Image (tube, rainbow, N blue to C red; front, side, top):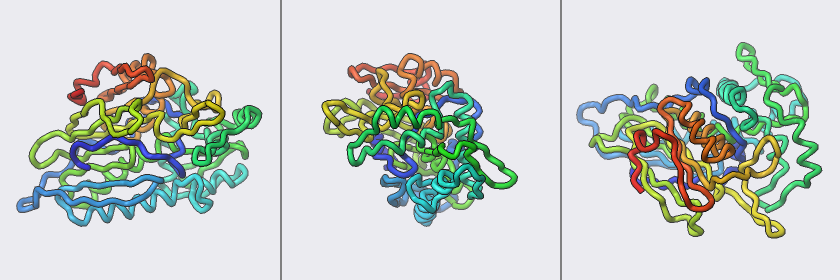
Length: 352
Protein backbone atom coordinates (compact mmCIF):
# COMPACT_ATOMS: atom_id res chain seq x y z
CA UNK A 1 0.00 0.00 0.00
CA UNK A 2 2.99 2.28 -0.40
CA UNK A 3 1.31 4.30 -3.12
CA UNK A 4 -2.26 5.45 -3.62
CA UNK A 5 -3.31 3.91 -0.30
CA UNK A 6 -6.94 4.29 0.68
CA UNK A 7 -7.52 5.69 4.14
CA UNK A 8 -10.14 3.27 5.49
CA UNK A 9 -10.16 3.03 9.27
CA UNK A 10 -11.14 -0.50 10.28
CA UNK A 11 -13.35 -1.52 13.14
CA UNK A 12 -11.68 -1.11 16.48
CA UNK A 13 -12.28 -3.89 18.95
CA UNK A 14 -9.53 -4.64 21.51
CA UNK A 15 -7.24 -1.65 21.98
CA UNK A 16 -8.93 0.20 19.20
CA UNK A 17 -12.31 0.74 20.84
CA UNK A 18 -11.99 4.44 20.22
CA UNK A 19 -11.75 6.87 23.07
CA UNK A 20 -12.08 10.60 22.66
CA UNK A 21 -8.65 12.20 22.47
CA UNK A 22 -7.21 15.63 22.99
CA UNK A 23 -4.72 18.00 21.46
CA UNK A 24 -1.52 18.50 23.45
CA UNK A 25 1.76 20.07 22.40
CA UNK A 26 3.59 18.03 25.03
CA UNK A 27 2.88 14.90 23.03
CA UNK A 28 5.27 15.79 20.27
CA UNK A 29 7.93 13.96 22.27
CA UNK A 30 5.88 10.75 22.23
CA UNK A 31 5.96 10.23 18.47
CA UNK A 32 8.73 8.78 16.41
CA UNK A 33 7.49 8.53 12.83
CA UNK A 34 9.66 11.12 11.17
CA UNK A 35 10.97 11.51 7.66
CA UNK A 36 14.41 10.33 8.68
CA UNK A 37 15.01 6.98 7.03
CA UNK A 38 18.59 5.97 6.33
CA UNK A 39 20.06 6.18 2.84
CA UNK A 40 19.89 3.17 0.57
CA UNK A 41 23.05 1.09 0.46
CA UNK A 42 24.86 0.59 -2.84
CA UNK A 43 23.40 -2.27 -4.83
CA UNK A 44 20.22 -2.44 -2.77
CA UNK A 45 17.12 -3.12 -4.85
CA UNK A 46 14.83 -0.16 -5.51
CA UNK A 47 11.85 -2.54 -5.49
CA UNK A 48 9.99 -2.80 -2.17
CA UNK A 49 9.05 -5.95 -0.29
CA UNK A 50 5.57 -6.20 1.19
CA UNK A 51 4.03 -8.03 4.12
CA UNK A 52 0.95 -8.06 6.27
CA UNK A 53 -0.53 -9.35 9.49
CA UNK A 54 -3.80 -9.18 11.38
CA UNK A 55 -3.58 -7.31 14.67
CA UNK A 56 -5.58 -4.72 16.59
CA UNK A 57 -8.68 -6.13 14.86
CA UNK A 58 -7.48 -4.85 11.49
CA UNK A 59 -5.19 -5.85 8.64
CA UNK A 60 -1.78 -4.24 8.97
CA UNK A 61 0.26 -3.92 5.78
CA UNK A 62 3.90 -3.03 5.32
CA UNK A 63 5.84 -1.90 2.25
CA UNK A 64 9.56 -1.67 2.92
CA UNK A 65 12.48 -0.62 0.73
CA UNK A 66 15.96 -1.93 1.44
CA UNK A 67 15.41 -4.87 3.80
CA UNK A 68 13.51 -7.98 2.71
CA UNK A 69 13.35 -9.33 6.26
CA UNK A 70 11.80 -6.19 7.76
CA UNK A 71 8.09 -7.02 7.18
CA UNK A 72 8.40 -10.17 9.28
CA UNK A 73 10.00 -8.14 12.07
CA UNK A 74 7.14 -5.64 11.89
CA UNK A 75 4.51 -8.38 12.01
CA UNK A 76 6.10 -9.92 15.09
CA UNK A 77 6.19 -6.52 16.79
CA UNK A 78 2.49 -5.98 16.02
CA UNK A 79 1.65 -9.29 17.67
CA UNK A 80 3.58 -8.27 20.77
CA UNK A 81 1.89 -4.86 21.02
CA UNK A 82 -1.54 -6.42 20.52
CA UNK A 83 -0.88 -8.79 23.38
CA UNK A 84 0.13 -5.89 25.63
CA UNK A 85 -2.63 -3.41 24.84
CA UNK A 86 -5.72 -5.49 23.99
CA UNK A 87 -8.47 -4.14 26.24
CA UNK A 88 -10.46 -7.38 26.04
CA UNK A 89 -7.66 -9.92 26.55
CA UNK A 90 -7.51 -10.72 30.30
CA UNK A 91 -3.77 -11.40 30.03
CA UNK A 92 -2.91 -8.02 28.51
CA UNK A 93 -1.32 -5.25 30.53
CA UNK A 94 -4.32 -2.96 30.03
CA UNK A 95 -6.81 -5.61 31.15
CA UNK A 96 -4.70 -6.48 34.20
CA UNK A 97 -4.54 -2.81 35.22
CA UNK A 98 -8.32 -2.57 34.86
CA UNK A 99 -8.87 -5.72 36.95
CA UNK A 100 -6.46 -4.83 39.75
CA UNK A 101 -9.02 -3.13 41.99
CA UNK A 102 -6.91 -0.02 42.42
CA UNK A 103 -3.59 -1.75 43.12
CA UNK A 104 -0.41 -0.86 41.17
CA UNK A 105 0.37 -3.34 38.41
CA UNK A 106 3.82 -4.15 37.05
CA UNK A 107 3.70 -3.83 33.27
CA UNK A 108 5.93 -3.81 30.22
CA UNK A 109 8.00 -0.65 29.63
CA UNK A 110 6.00 0.00 26.45
CA UNK A 111 2.79 0.04 28.46
CA UNK A 112 4.32 2.51 30.89
CA UNK A 113 5.43 4.70 27.98
CA UNK A 114 2.03 4.52 26.23
CA UNK A 115 0.06 5.45 29.34
CA UNK A 116 2.51 8.20 30.27
CA UNK A 117 2.31 9.61 26.77
CA UNK A 118 -1.49 9.48 26.75
CA UNK A 119 -1.72 11.26 30.10
CA UNK A 120 0.09 14.20 28.58
CA UNK A 121 -2.73 14.46 26.05
CA UNK A 122 -5.28 14.23 28.84
CA UNK A 123 -3.65 17.13 30.65
CA UNK A 124 -4.07 19.31 27.56
CA UNK A 125 -7.51 18.07 26.68
CA UNK A 126 -10.03 20.33 28.33
CA UNK A 127 -12.37 17.35 28.64
CA UNK A 128 -12.06 16.11 25.06
CA UNK A 129 -9.87 13.12 25.86
CA UNK A 130 -9.73 10.79 28.83
CA UNK A 131 -8.05 7.39 28.75
CA UNK A 132 -10.38 6.17 31.50
CA UNK A 133 -13.24 6.39 28.99
CA UNK A 134 -13.14 2.59 29.28
CA UNK A 135 -15.55 2.85 32.21
CA UNK A 136 -18.14 3.88 29.60
CA UNK A 137 -16.84 2.43 26.32
CA UNK A 138 -16.93 -1.12 27.68
CA UNK A 139 -20.69 -0.72 28.24
CA UNK A 140 -21.26 -0.32 24.50
CA UNK A 141 -21.34 -3.33 22.17
CA UNK A 142 -21.05 -2.11 18.58
CA UNK A 143 -20.66 -5.62 17.23
CA UNK A 144 -23.94 -6.79 18.75
CA UNK A 145 -25.65 -3.44 18.25
CA UNK A 146 -26.44 -2.87 21.92
CA UNK A 147 -26.32 0.41 23.81
CA UNK A 148 -26.22 0.89 27.58
CA UNK A 149 -29.13 2.50 29.36
CA UNK A 150 -28.95 6.17 30.27
CA UNK A 151 -28.75 5.10 33.90
CA UNK A 152 -25.74 2.86 33.22
CA UNK A 153 -23.94 5.66 31.42
CA UNK A 154 -24.69 8.11 34.23
CA UNK A 155 -23.37 5.66 36.82
CA UNK A 156 -20.13 5.10 34.88
CA UNK A 157 -19.31 8.74 34.07
CA UNK A 158 -17.98 9.63 37.56
CA UNK A 159 -15.27 7.00 37.02
CA UNK A 160 -13.99 8.74 33.88
CA UNK A 161 -11.15 10.77 35.36
CA UNK A 162 -7.63 10.51 33.98
CA UNK A 163 -6.21 12.25 37.05
CA UNK A 164 -6.79 9.03 38.97
CA UNK A 165 -4.18 7.24 36.83
CA UNK A 166 -0.73 6.97 38.41
CA UNK A 167 2.36 5.96 36.44
CA UNK A 168 5.51 5.07 38.37
CA UNK A 169 8.17 4.92 35.68
CA UNK A 170 10.92 3.92 38.09
CA UNK A 171 8.91 1.01 39.45
CA UNK A 172 7.40 0.14 36.08
CA UNK A 173 3.83 0.21 37.38
CA UNK A 174 0.47 1.72 36.44
CA UNK A 175 -2.27 2.22 39.02
CA UNK A 176 -5.92 3.28 38.89
CA UNK A 177 -6.71 5.07 42.15
CA UNK A 178 -10.40 4.61 41.36
CA UNK A 179 -11.04 0.83 41.38
CA UNK A 180 -14.04 1.36 39.06
CA UNK A 181 -12.04 3.24 36.42
CA UNK A 182 -11.09 1.43 33.21
CA UNK A 183 -8.35 2.28 30.76
CA UNK A 184 -9.14 2.31 27.04
CA UNK A 185 -6.11 3.34 24.99
CA UNK A 186 -7.90 3.28 21.66
CA UNK A 187 -7.40 6.97 20.95
CA UNK A 188 -3.62 6.72 20.80
CA UNK A 189 -2.44 3.10 20.81
CA UNK A 190 -2.14 2.51 17.05
CA UNK A 191 -0.32 5.80 16.62
CA UNK A 192 2.11 4.92 19.38
CA UNK A 193 2.65 1.50 17.79
CA UNK A 194 3.23 2.99 14.34
CA UNK A 195 5.89 5.27 15.78
CA UNK A 196 7.56 2.34 17.55
CA UNK A 197 7.54 0.34 14.30
CA UNK A 198 9.31 3.21 12.58
CA UNK A 199 11.88 3.23 15.39
CA UNK A 200 12.39 -0.50 14.88
CA UNK A 201 13.02 0.02 11.17
CA UNK A 202 15.53 2.80 11.77
CA UNK A 203 17.44 1.14 14.58
CA UNK A 204 17.30 -2.57 13.81
CA UNK A 205 17.00 -2.96 10.03
CA UNK A 206 18.56 -1.72 6.81
CA UNK A 207 15.30 -0.24 5.59
CA UNK A 208 15.72 2.99 3.66
CA UNK A 209 12.00 3.82 3.39
CA UNK A 210 8.68 2.28 4.32
CA UNK A 211 4.92 2.74 4.31
CA UNK A 212 3.02 1.20 7.21
CA UNK A 213 -0.76 0.92 7.39
CA UNK A 214 -2.47 -0.02 10.64
CA UNK A 215 -6.07 0.36 9.54
CA UNK A 216 -6.74 4.08 9.48
CA UNK A 217 -3.24 4.92 10.70
CA UNK A 218 -0.67 5.45 7.96
CA UNK A 219 3.00 6.11 8.73
CA UNK A 220 5.72 6.84 6.19
CA UNK A 221 9.42 6.47 6.92
CA UNK A 222 11.99 8.07 4.70
CA UNK A 223 11.60 8.93 1.02
CA UNK A 224 10.86 6.55 -1.84
CA UNK A 225 13.93 5.76 -3.97
CA UNK A 226 12.55 7.65 -6.96
CA UNK A 227 11.94 10.76 -4.87
CA UNK A 228 8.19 10.82 -5.51
CA UNK A 229 5.82 11.57 -2.63
CA UNK A 230 3.76 9.03 -0.72
CA UNK A 231 0.16 9.22 -1.96
CA UNK A 232 -2.81 8.47 0.28
CA UNK A 233 -6.42 8.59 -0.88
CA UNK A 234 -8.87 9.96 1.67
CA UNK A 235 -12.18 8.16 1.79
CA UNK A 236 -15.52 9.88 1.38
CA UNK A 237 -17.33 9.07 4.65
CA UNK A 238 -20.69 10.03 3.17
CA UNK A 239 -20.49 7.49 0.32
CA UNK A 240 -22.46 4.32 1.18
CA UNK A 241 -20.17 1.94 -0.68
CA UNK A 242 -17.04 3.20 1.02
CA UNK A 243 -14.94 2.96 -2.14
CA UNK A 244 -14.95 6.60 -3.24
CA UNK A 245 -12.21 9.02 -2.30
CA UNK A 246 -12.48 12.78 -2.06
CA UNK A 247 -8.86 13.37 -3.02
CA UNK A 248 -5.25 12.41 -2.49
CA UNK A 249 -2.76 13.70 0.06
CA UNK A 250 0.90 13.74 -1.04
CA UNK A 251 3.50 13.63 1.73
CA UNK A 252 7.27 13.37 1.91
CA UNK A 253 6.98 11.46 5.21
CA UNK A 254 5.26 11.45 8.59
CA UNK A 255 1.79 10.14 9.29
CA UNK A 256 -1.85 10.45 8.25
CA UNK A 257 -4.63 9.29 10.57
CA UNK A 258 -8.37 9.41 9.97
CA UNK A 259 -11.26 9.16 12.42
CA UNK A 260 -14.72 8.77 10.93
CA UNK A 261 -18.33 7.94 11.68
CA UNK A 262 -18.23 4.93 9.35
CA UNK A 263 -15.72 2.93 11.39
CA UNK A 264 -18.22 1.14 13.64
CA UNK A 265 -21.91 1.94 13.76
CA UNK A 266 -25.24 0.32 14.49
CA UNK A 267 -28.85 1.38 14.27
CA UNK A 268 -31.32 0.80 17.10
CA UNK A 269 -34.92 1.99 17.20
CA UNK A 270 -34.28 4.32 14.29
CA UNK A 271 -31.19 5.93 15.86
CA UNK A 272 -27.68 5.46 14.47
CA UNK A 273 -24.86 5.20 17.03
CA UNK A 274 -21.14 5.37 16.26
CA UNK A 275 -18.12 4.36 18.26
CA UNK A 276 -16.45 7.72 18.92
CA UNK A 277 -17.63 8.63 22.40
CA UNK A 278 -17.54 11.98 24.16
CA UNK A 279 -15.99 11.40 27.61
CA UNK A 280 -18.07 14.27 28.97
CA UNK A 281 -21.35 12.53 28.15
CA UNK A 282 -20.52 8.88 27.52
CA UNK A 283 -22.52 9.08 24.30
CA UNK A 284 -21.47 9.18 20.64
CA UNK A 285 -20.03 12.52 19.63
CA UNK A 286 -22.47 14.89 17.94
CA UNK A 287 -20.70 17.53 15.84
CA UNK A 288 -20.69 18.70 12.22
CA UNK A 289 -17.90 16.26 11.30
CA UNK A 290 -18.22 12.96 9.43
CA UNK A 291 -14.46 12.36 9.28
CA UNK A 292 -11.23 14.18 9.99
CA UNK A 293 -7.76 13.35 8.69
CA UNK A 294 -4.67 14.64 10.47
CA UNK A 295 -1.20 14.96 8.94
CA UNK A 296 1.67 15.13 11.43
CA UNK A 297 5.28 13.92 11.76
CA UNK A 298 4.27 11.79 14.77
CA UNK A 299 1.65 9.08 14.32
CA UNK A 300 0.84 9.14 18.04
CA UNK A 301 0.04 12.83 17.84
CA UNK A 302 -1.92 12.38 14.61
CA UNK A 303 -3.90 9.52 16.17
CA UNK A 304 -4.75 11.48 19.30
CA UNK A 305 -5.58 14.64 17.41
CA UNK A 306 -7.81 12.91 14.85
CA UNK A 307 -10.31 11.94 17.52
CA UNK A 308 -9.82 15.16 19.45
CA UNK A 309 -10.70 17.22 16.41
CA UNK A 310 -13.64 14.98 15.66
CA UNK A 311 -14.99 15.65 19.15
CA UNK A 312 -14.29 19.36 18.80
CA UNK A 313 -15.94 19.79 15.39
CA UNK A 314 -14.50 21.47 12.33
CA UNK A 315 -14.26 25.08 13.50
CA UNK A 316 -12.62 24.48 16.89
CA UNK A 317 -10.74 21.48 15.52
CA UNK A 318 -9.04 23.49 12.78
CA UNK A 319 -7.77 25.92 15.40
CA UNK A 320 -6.48 23.04 17.54
CA UNK A 321 -4.59 21.62 14.58
CA UNK A 322 -3.06 25.00 13.82
CA UNK A 323 -1.71 25.12 17.38
CA UNK A 324 0.61 22.20 16.55
CA UNK A 325 3.79 22.63 14.55
CA UNK A 326 3.89 20.83 11.17
CA UNK A 327 0.35 19.56 11.74
CA UNK A 328 -2.73 19.96 9.58
CA UNK A 329 -6.29 18.62 9.42
CA UNK A 330 -8.93 18.04 6.75
CA UNK A 331 -12.59 17.79 7.75
CA UNK A 332 -15.43 16.22 5.78
CA UNK A 333 -18.71 17.37 7.25
CA UNK A 334 -21.94 15.47 7.57
CA UNK A 335 -23.52 17.76 4.97
CA UNK A 336 -20.82 16.86 2.44
CA UNK A 337 -18.90 20.14 2.66
CA UNK A 338 -15.27 20.29 3.74
CA UNK A 339 -13.00 22.42 5.89
CA UNK A 340 -9.27 22.43 6.54
CA UNK A 341 -6.72 23.92 8.85
CA UNK A 342 -4.51 26.70 7.53
CA UNK A 343 -1.52 24.51 6.61
CA UNK A 344 -3.32 21.51 5.10
CA UNK A 345 -2.47 22.32 1.51
CA UNK A 346 1.09 23.29 2.34
CA UNK A 347 1.81 20.04 4.18
CA UNK A 348 -0.09 17.60 1.98
CA UNK A 349 -0.29 19.08 -1.54
CA UNK A 350 -3.84 17.75 -1.46
CA UNK A 351 -5.51 17.11 -4.80
CA UNK A 352 -9.31 16.75 -4.84
